[in-house]
Structures are given as C-alpha cells and as structure tokens.
Length: 320
Length: 319
Image 1 (cartoon, one colour):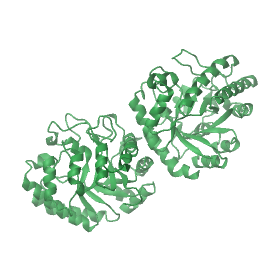
Image 2 (tube, chains in turn green, orange):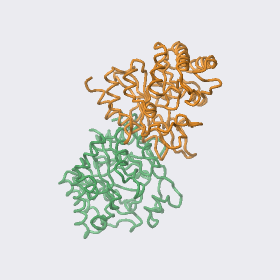
Image 3 (cartoon, one colour):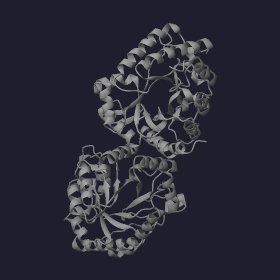
Image 4 (cartoon, one colour):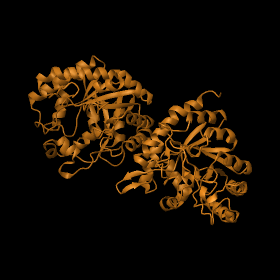
C-alpha cells in the first residue's frame, strides 16, 4: 500500500489568456514539485492555442509529442502526469468535434475513440487514471431514469475496458452539480458499473458540497476507489441550486443565489472535510494509488499549493 | 550547524500576500504569520532570518522572542538564524564614518543584543555605511573610521555570542570593489565579518564570485538573490532613496533561478564549495511583488533552484 501525491494544475488556469506562456507553466510546475508533489493532474480543455496543456493536439503543437511534454515535466523535477480529468460534454475546436452525452448510446463510438486517444497520450505522460465526469449536470435533464442509467453505466464499462487495454483505468468523478445527486444516482451507477474496469474517484470537497461525508464514502466504497481528489469545502450546495439553468456558470462559478464566493479551500483550514480522517480511512483500506490535491478556485495558486504541501508533508504523509 | 547537511537554507524576512483587508506582510497577524511560515517550510527552507525592528511586532503578538521562535519551530523550521539590523543612518546621529555618532551607535547595539538575548543567533547583519550621498567623497579616513566603529560593535555582539557581519547595499557608501577591499583591510578580522549579497554587489558592478574569492575567510553568510540591472546611472546617488525609487529601474531584485539574471549562481556555488564553506545560506528576494511578481511563487522557485541546481553542484567533487 502506498499513496503517491500529485497536484492538479486546474487552479492555474482561470481564463483563456492566462497561463499560456511556457515560462508560466515552468514556474507552476516547479512550485508544485518543490512543495512536495511528485506529479501533476492535467485537465482536458480546448480553446485552440490558448490551452497549450489542454489536450494531445496542443501538447503536440507545443512539445512535439506527449513524450516531449513529459521531458518538460521531468526538467521541472516531476515524474510526469498522474492523471487526466475529462468532461465528455466538451468537444475539441482542433478537430471540430462536439462533446458526447453519455446517456445516449449512439454517441458511444465517438466517446470510445476520444477516451482511447486521451489514454494513449496519458500513458506517454506517465499517468494511469482517466478521471471522467460521470454524468451531466442536473440542470441538463434532471435525474437519470433507469434506461439512462443503464446507458451511462454501459458507456463507462466500455470506456473502462478500452482504456484498460492501454494501461489506464477509467474512474468516475462526482461533482456537486451532477445529476447523480438525484434519486440516489451515484450509488446506482457505482453498482451498475464493472469493478474490473471502472473505478471511483473520491473527491472530498465535491462529496462534502454534495452533502456526502467523504470519510464515510471512502469506507463504504473502499474496494472501488482507485483515485482521490483531496480538497476542502465550506458549503453544501442544496438540490434546488443544482437545478438552476447553466449551474456550472451560475452556481459553481457565479456563487448561486447565496452568493458563495468560493466553494473550495486549502486543506486543514476549517472546512467540512477532515483530511486526516480521509487519509486514515484510505490507509485502513490499504489504498494504493494517487491522491491528487486540488485548490481550484484559489485566488492565489502558489500560496495554495505551498500550504497544501505543508499539510501533506507535516500532517498527512506521516499518517501513511 | 545542526544536522548532517553541510548547507542549509534560511529565508529572509520579506513577504506580501493579498488578504481580505488588502495586501499585507506576514507580520500583519498570527494567521498571516502561520501561513507564511508554512509556505517557507513546505518548499524546504530550514530556518528564517528577520529584521530586528520586528521586535515590536514580536513582543506585541508573541510576548517574547523565545515565544516567537517556538511559533516558528512548531511549523517545522529550526530557528531564527540571523537578524538584520535596521537603522536610519541619519548623518547627524548615526553615521559610521562620523566619529561623533559612534557612542549612540554602540549604545544602540548594546540595547539590540540585550533585546535578542532570549535566542541563539549566528549573525547580526548591518549595512556598514550611510547612504552613498551622505558619505561621499569616500576617503581613506572615512573608511578607517567606519572600520573602527564596526570593530567595536563586533566586540559587543560577540559578548552575546553573535557575529557582526557587513552587507554592502549598492547605494551605501562602501560598495565599490576598491572601497570594499580597503574597508576589510582596515577592519579587525576578529570582530568584523562579511555578509555577501550576490545581487547588491552585481548592481554595484562588483563580481560577487571574485569578491568572495578575495574575502572568503571573512564571509559568515550570504544573501542569494538575483538582479537583471546594474547601476549605470549613478542611482546610488539618487535622493531620497534608490532601492525603491530609482527612475530607470522599477524592480532591482529577482529570485535566484530567474531568467535574464546577472548573477552566475553556479559559479558562486562552486566557489562556496571549493572554499569549504558550511553553514547557512540565506535566500532573499525583497520587492518580489513589484511589477506583478508574487512572493510565494518566487520563494518556491528559488528553493527549487537551490535543491535542483545548487545542492547538486555543492555535492560534486571539489575542483
């Protein structure tokens, strides 16, 4: 059993024209490295040349190959990329592809192709987890009915089998806006997917913001959890707020009717997540894999990474 | 030097962060200090240096300097290594080259050392001269008078077990290579040591490696920081102040490892290694927040450079 500590790069990219130059990437990656993290989790995104780390097209444009980008990561004293977060609802301007609705079985072939493409690049980057947004947000159609849930589970089982053949496990990520919060969707989807090929990501802050105790979740699903996002939250988002149209912008980014300025916080600063208890639960479950610390929505990325690095080094890693 | 590492890294007392109440330094309250220390410790610094004028904040927030050091240690740092002495260098009553001001300066150091006696320190760092424009023309007599003062100050600080060491700002009266060499030839080596700031010397047109080669046996510490600009405009003469208010240079200092830096840190570290220096190296990047810079990131980048470049050089065989 061993935990490997990685850090998510998503907090450094607040807007399309920020975090574009290579010097900015180098400084962020060195900050992550010297703060005690081994690798980095990338975020699939597409906005042409202004998302140089967002997908294999742009990585090739900027570094020649994925292996070339891994060399850049190594030059910054990181081993590589641990994982890639992928929301299948978004397409790519590079090949003018649209996103996929995982509830629609007719869209599965395209999804399989894209997932395999990402997994192949991820292997070259040294990673082994494709972290997928497991279902559309609740405002895009409400709860999953039985047929939809079967289609979603079948889609992820197929994707999981495909990426497993490339050396990458597909792992389901719950976000607090997800349709899976309705009608016990998350538990139903976990039950309906194949443990051989589909794992579960425990994102502590997204769980807490969904009203789910992350420690209890880790204990109940220890056998399925194959990836962890560790961050804190201070607010639970009620179900009426996730039904607000375009909640990704109106609630997650905009704060919703209560004007929540920031959903996620650094570890150990008084939020809903007991990070020590989460790590103890992982250790008790013999968890063997990545724990990716995140601080998306941080107003100050370097400070957040360094504070989280202190908590990992001085508080959490000694528990392992 | 405690522990088994020949070189350890201390972080010098400069910081700024955006707080809900606006931009603040780490001394703003206990929470800002808590986060500052954790960030410094997280990236691998072993200790901190502080300005001695922070005593007022220390007493107000922590009760004593020993209590403050305990607060530091609880966050994973070993201790406070050096203090940097803050003084106004008013030529009327605080000018090393003016003998009549010496009694007041000596008394200032007796008070300072007593105030800090609650903890163990390695060095008290001073600027050994007034501002350039308050000292020029620089004469042999003024250099000798200054050296005499610092010898007497060094005797006082050694009574508390602390070395007196001199840090040559580019805008101070002793900053050319010739004047630095002359000053140390006059100063008593038992009491007057040299604290080498790589960027300050570079700005003044002094090669920090060469001056270290000359004076390495007097060096009791370093500020490792970088610059991209030399003083080619007589900025050292600028009134009222040239480190923050120079007309042509908005930002003098950068963290080591910066692109376009003028300091050859690899050569510096080889010289440090080859002369068998062991002990603390302090890292500094004052004014890092100017022009959109970020203290936290600069601190991380500098420690990354120390770990991944300089420590490897130090570990190589001596030439």
